[in-house]
Image (tube, rainbow over all chains, first blue to last red; front, side, top):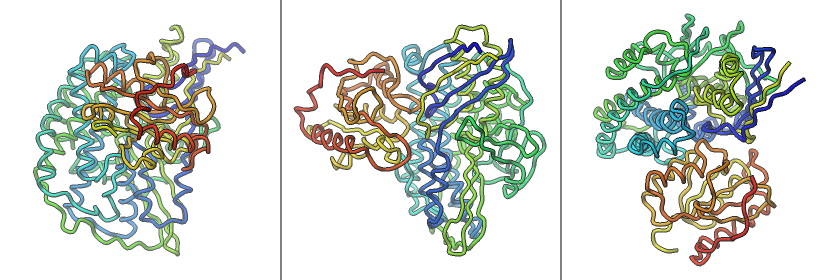
Amino acid sequence: MKTRTLRVDNLARVEGEGKLVLTTRGREVVAAELRIFEPPRFFEALLAGREPGEAVDITSRICGICPVAYQMSAAHALEGLAQAAVSPEIRALRRLLYCGEWIESHALHVVMLHAPDFLGLADVVELARLDRRLVERGLALKKLGNDLVRALGGREIHPVNVCLGGFYSAPGRDRLADLIPAAERGLEVARELLEWVSSFAFPPFDDAYEYVALSHPQEYAMNEGRLRSSEGLDEPVAAFEDHFEESQVAHSHALHCHRRGGGVYAVGPLARVCLNHQQLTPLAREAARSAGLTEPCRNPFRSIVARAVELIFACEEALRLLAAYRPPEPSRVPVVLRPGRALAATEAPRGLLYHRYDVGEDGLLAGVRIVPPTSQNQARIERDLLQVGAAVLDLPAPQATWRCEQAIRNYDPCISCATHFLEVQWERE
Amino acid sequence: MGAGVSVVALGNRWRGDDGLGPRVLELLGHGRQLGDDLTELLQVFREADRVILVDALRAELPVGTILTWQPEDRPGAGRLSSHGLDLQQVLQLARALGCLPPVTVVGVVGQDFGAGSSLTPEVEAAARVVAAMCNDEDHIAWTWGGRRLLL
């Protein structure tokens, strides 16, 4: 068997590392295996036997880039079991916190990790040499996200202020009002970024896509909603495990997710914009329309445009919430747990994040399941790579590898628990 | 410790020897911990006069080996860490943006970066040496010349 091996020391501009193996037969790519080595079960095992309240803190360590998402999914799951309803003020503050995380995550990805691909640049350093002002503005937007998370979460890396039932303490009105000027500047930058990324040349791509996201009738869903898909799924989150299943694949420690019945699917900004653009804030909705994302979009390379739309949304929404802010009094509601199954899904920057906790008769966690967005997208990424790999068969190894990496970066995958370097390996049958 | 010198640690205390950075800060009793997002460094650079960066790294050298270098000593090839934007890129970005202060990078060669919160004994020993270095201004200016990373 003749093997053409493309070796890359690591998958650049993705959180963590991984390995990609593409198998060709003639001019067809017959298999794409994305081997991500992560210990996802470490945290699930770590939580067994612990107090349920610890889930909010412990799961936030799973991802250094989106700790808020893990806290939100954990808190909503356990509050659901306890039938504890948070006040509208707490609900609003949580939404503002999530806006902060979306802003910092999307700004980082759009400007620093993904845009260089579309401009033929090796990385953001080259971009900064060409357009320093743009990178500075992108960093300022990202800082807005960080500042929002810090103001509400109490610390930069792992927000410590979030708890079951709400927050340990609510920031004062002035503290949040101070962020309004930066949020207004952030909105300007977000609109500038959308115009910029809309001008990129997108590699052609088309495939049958099923998008999955939370959906809410009145707002662009972040913490609450029903499970909806572009193929007509419309179910409560409690039915998640009836409709989606995880299976261990031999080549990766991550689990693959499929619709029960077999199909791959995609979660994330493109899924959200396609399903929920009607609920976007006004400028974001108009941006989605002018960028052509209100029509079904089946090209994952345009996810960068969806992220830019969501940056506009998150800034608009943050401004609305900042202006209307009333410190919740009290800052948290009582949460009294009982044995049973707790579950919830919220929309992390990268997509739907599902948590399920079983609370035993002793009041401790008996079992935990966490389904991150990146593992839900992994099968879909591999499906994309069948097409992308075929399109770059004749390119020299460095260019072919780069296009494959770019296709993986479309999903802003978070594989920060990985410990191995990426190789891209071609095998001919 | 001179005014305007910031010690910044990188690393995840839940990932074995990657906890080197946090351990140094714990021994020092001061300094700033960064998470997975290295672009936060750019903010540190804008605020500090001089920066010491402490991080674990992988290299073909004995576990616990301590290396120090200034960014200009190393050309931009290769990656030194497992984060999205790696340390070399952030340093280069800071230079391109005109906000790179004098920086000394202190790296300790680690062995086990799997899940867990303890350090390999040699790395723990190195952490103590690094903490002592950070407290001694003479050490800050001293580069262990002649040792180069093998990538």
